Structures are given as structure tokens and as C-alpha cells.
Length: 563
Image 1 (cartoon, rainbow, N blue to C red):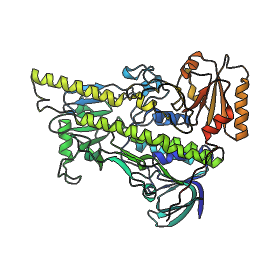
Image 2: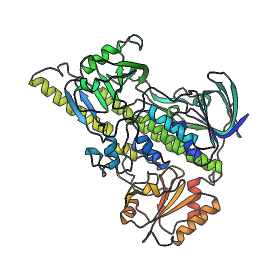
Image 3: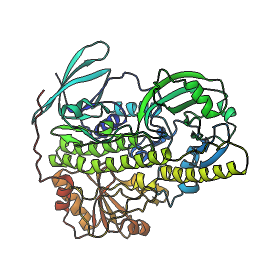
Image 4: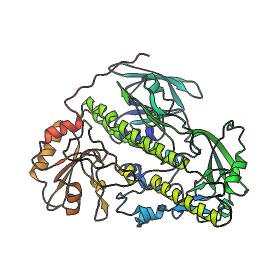
């Protein structure tokens, strides 16, 4: 019988990032992943700024950014009548080299996207091997590849998991203090706990609704066939065949997505004819694989935890892919839950801390799925006139109007600093409340704020992000007259209180007046996930605030689940 502190069922981005967060804090965990090999079919091709910031905290953002499209390959989104035909509109997104150099680039300037990490375009099949390698570097993390859980039972003391190897059928048994289901929409953990999804399923739309099919292929000639400046996404918008083409590696790998009509099946549809109609020309290609999937989901689990069981990622929420928020919300779940589980296992936080996971993440899941649905409604609701590809002045006016509508849509979908950077946990039981009006939550606009619950705002300090100064766990940010002075007396009192409570606390002194103005207080307590727990002045009651932030005086009631 194997034992561990945390059993993670599912080794996708959520499960692996959770293992990384636990592993870097020395928490023993086991990841059960049914697939031995990492995925080799494209999906989840947009990594948000927030996710890149999380990768930066763990030290491998640069490795992730090196994946996918070449450094100078445009990451634009372009809409055309046919992909080899007329261009209706183009939304420019910084290439990898521009993102690294922080070139001021259209909608992605420093003022509108104040982050050390702009979004990145790279497929999950490229990213997941990096996450596996990062998790495996920790001796306390065990990846059990090829193993699937078949039953889960839990009482007030432990979780018991039984299963077998997918190929050899060798059985195993595992005892854990906690189990986390990162096991997708058919989650065994969620079903065992009796937790249901709420929301909408497979809503019908003109595009991105219902049954979809992805076609993964290579072509050495397609860029020449398209005959236009390269892009990351190419959308065919015509009355005959709509479709989406995604550049995978910027060389010869592509993914084409089409929606099936009523009566069509993934086996019966002539995807070659659909691709040629959307592109506007036949071309030579080699098929790698096809993959059916469903769009139009706006589903969030009614609960994110029950007793010693938690769910994260697709097990907790299911998106339609517009906006690219499914994978990114999953990584954010893992980061939020990871430090909390570690704090409880290591004994410096009360078990009530774990209840804050649902309190904080469920509203974010509802927020993000609602945005994705709105964007799917937006693109699906754009009607395409039958003469969009005709000759003449009337058709030219039609194309201009359609292009304007598409540009409004694409800016709303991809210029989303507020959605990616503006997430807040105000009202959380482990965040200090603060009087005054809350900052508006606007997907397309981000107003930096250090109000408790918000993501700590980024600022450059002599070429270094303030994020890079924060500790692994809690950080007390002290704004002082000089970086080189001895820490102020109240900061030493914070350190003493943290030491007495065994709470890991880093002390960062900063003399930047701009940073002080941005953070709006002399003292700021920053959480391990870089959200603000509290801000105030030197007179604060450090022991009481640390107890609040770590849920030290509360007790959870654990509910047993029978086998």
C-alpha cells in the first residue's frame, strides 16, 4: 500500500502544475496519469499572461516561450473571405521576439498590458512535456504514467484510491491525505463526490457550437497558397464554408477546425472538401490525424471540494474555446490550490484555508466561462452576406462592414488584459476587507490595483520585475526611504510573528516612489500566488493578520464518502 500526502488524478496542465507547486515546497504527491506519452494532437494553443507569470515564478517561462511559432513569426489573427482570398481584417499580436523585447505594439503596449510576461502562442502538446519534466525534478513528486484510478473512498482521516495500469492491468492501492481530481470533464473524483456541473452544454451557433472536427496535417506549400503575411489564426468567413486554420510550428504543421452540419458525423464528413472550400484552393497536404470535439459549453461545477477531495481544471469547469481561457483557468486553479495544500500539509496553516479554494476559484470559473460564451456568441452571431466574395462596389461595401464587425469582435476576444490580469479574490475569507468601491472588472481594460484580493501589480525596478523579488511563499513588501537601510522595526515584528507561527515570510524593502504609489500603502502582504492579502501601515497587528491569511483559528468539518 503506497501512501502520499496528495494524490493527483490526471496529469494534464492542471495536475502537473499542481505537482510543481507542491513539489517546490517539499510536499509528497503522486500523479496518476492514464496516458504514458504526452499528447501529440494540438489543442489549447494560447497561454495567457497570467499563466506565463506563474511559469515565471517557477523559473521556466523562457523555456515555454521558446516553444511553438518561430521568434519572428507573426501571431496575428486574420479574417478572410477564403483563406487564400480577400483579407477582411487583421488583428496584430506581438511575435515572440517582440514580446521578449517589450516592443510597444499596437494594443499590447506597456500601459495596457503591465506585465513582465505577454501572452504566448504554443500548443499544449509542446508545453506538457516541459511541465512533466519540471514536476519530475522534485524527489517528492511521483508520476505514475499509464495508471488509472477506478475507485475512491474517503473518511475524516484519509483517502483510499484503487486502480490499475491501463496496459498491464497491474492493480495498485494508494492512501493519501487529500485527493485532487484534475481528470477532465468525466472526472471520477467529481462523480464520486456527487458534484454536478451547472450551465449550458453544446449551444448551437453558426460556428463554434455543437459537433466540431479538428484536422491536423502538414503542408510545405500552404503558406504560398495563402499568399499573405503570415498569422497565427486564419478565419474563413464566407457563406459556403466557415473554418479556422491555426499555424502550429510556423513551418509546415497546421490545424483546421470545422463545424459539422446536422446529420454529419466525424466519419462521414468530407473534411478535405471543407478545407479546400474554406481556403479557396486545393493544395497538397499530408494528414496526421483528425479529432472530434464539442463546442458550446459553459459549465461550472456546483462545488470545488468535498471533504478531502478537490477538483480543478476541466473537472471543475468546461469552456467553449473562444478566448483560450480553459487551460489558463486550469493552471490558475492549480496554483491557488497548490500553495494552500502545501501550507496545511506543512502545518503552518489551518485546514480551513482549503475552503478558500472554492470561495476564490468558483467565481473566477463563472466569470471566465461567461466571457468565453459571450465571445462564441459574438463570432457565431456575425452573419455572412452571400455576396461577400463578389466583385463590384456593393460587395466591397459589404466586405468593409463585415471587416469592421469582425475587428470589433477580435479586439474584444484577444485584447483582454483585464480578463487575464484583473482577477480578484475580494470577499475571500483569507483576504482582508477594505472599504471603498471595488475596481470594475472589465475584460478589455486593466487598471492595476493592490487592493486586497487583487493580483499584485507589476512594475519594473531597474529592469527587474517586482515579482522577481517576492519570496516563494508569503512576502511582506515594505516601502522605505532606502533599499539599503536596516528593515524597519515593524517589519522585524512581522518576521518574529511569522517565525513564531512557522509561516514562511520573505521581507522585501523597496524605496521606489512609483511602486509605493502603485501599491497604495506602506506595507503590503503578498500571498504565495502573488495576490494581495492585506495592505496598510506600520501600526498593523502582524500576528492577527497572519492568522487571518493562514486560517489559523478555524476548523473544517470533513464529510466521509463511502466506497
